[in-house]
Image (cartoon, rainbow, N blue to C red):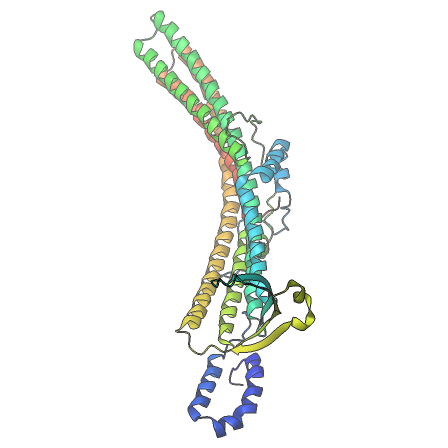
Length: 484
């Protein structure tokens, strides 16, 4: 029927049919034209929100990840326990209970649920009770002071009949926003658990780096003692002693930096746990091997599992409902207004049913001209819905990128770890050979010092890559939307 919404036709057709003859006989043609214009303004107000699909991610979704060897179902529940560290699991659960940022995110969920009640309150009648008591005194000279008192008990009711579903759409938008806020909360829990795990392994690496630096400093002192003894016997010159002392000072500075890093990471972890940053948290300094296997799953599963994607899709649906609700502002509103109560000079008469007076009014309001406010609101909400759609697609593509990137990084980091492990073995062997050769006078002091620096650098780099492997695995769980 020329694209005219059925709900609008159902409302206006009987009215137009009943009054068509009357308009032709008794009313000017211009008034009929005005009514017909009102009818046209309302066209399009009864549409339903567009159907959305979670797989509308802005690009074709592959059947499996390019960085994964197989597409097995992911085992992401309780991923913290896959590292096999009870201390880590205890810290994560403590943070989930005591972290203040997470508690703030929880209050936002409660606020969103309360907003649903507020936005949906228009579906129900609004009933008010207004008691009132007035007392008046009139003073006339010489005739006393008569007093008058009146007591009222007034009830009023207002109710907009949601025949088009405008208020319901408005409420549904709040429901979708609450769902998105809940998804944000789950995402905050996942992010906090990942941050705790990363900080825990950062602390383990910092302690191991400090131990390596301390051991290297002890070795440098041994070299200084060796060179000083040789200098005292006239075997070597003062330059060698100065070079050894300079290298020792550099090692001590690196040790101080490593110890400072331990206290920085410790205090950061304590704040995440909701504790005072006293720097007294003592945990194990072990970097375990990453869990075996890569639980990547299927790319399409990511759209319904990852919290930020769920939240983005819910906000898209909320924007659709707001746009639909604003379109229905063009339709006529049917309101029911009722009031009643009693008024008497005596309190005893308030409960007399004969003193009760009431009235009920049903009205209809059809917007005709609002200065472009309604049309502007429709355009605004439609633009926001389009924005939400593009943000969802952007979020989805970035989510796919993160997973692919982490999967690719896992392979390269494993290769790097193997190479650095061999480098540590070679540098340790060369260091032993260098000290032996220096004592026999086969090499210069610079070669000896360089062998020690190479050993320290290789050990430090190896620890860093082992920690990066663990962090990369945590990033994978985070990117896949793993459960806790």
